Length: 219
Ligand SMILES: [Zn+2]
Image 1 (cartoon, helix red, strand yellow):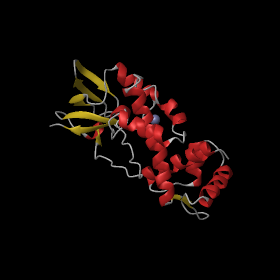
Image 2: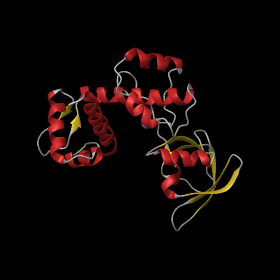
Image 3: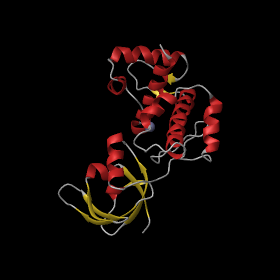
Image 4: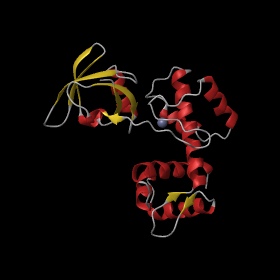
């Protein structure tokens, strides 16, 4: 089995654990778009390497070693995205697929130099935190825009559950990290929000968008 596949499983377990504390065979099967027996086989291999704790019929957890290993891959992914945007001038909606490939490169010095060239950033271009080399991850306590009320002023710090099409739409609406929103109205019917920001007034954002925009409150 190629290393790349193993690394993608590690990442998938890491993200599922972040959401639900543990991962199950069926969740992984859905995530990786393979059948459950393929997942089970793979998990056994990862357990042999000491990357996951696995007992039949129990949820799957990354071992401490697996946790660090997964964080390294995510570190490489997020540094690459930052490099592509900051140094190479890509849009934030153009970098994920490239980073999916680059994250599997083994050269540690490549990523160390990227890190240095970028001035040791703590987040990627979407505001997701970049894990440290030892696997530690500092998560800031941002809340989703959808939690706030009329009159609140919020600054965009991160976009979660993002897809390239969402990021492209935000760019079209001139929304980026650092954008300051003023909430003018919250529709009782579907919780969509009418907001002002920059030179844009009375822009409606759906609830689906608002729950993905992570913000800090300014006042
Ligand atoms: Zn990405």
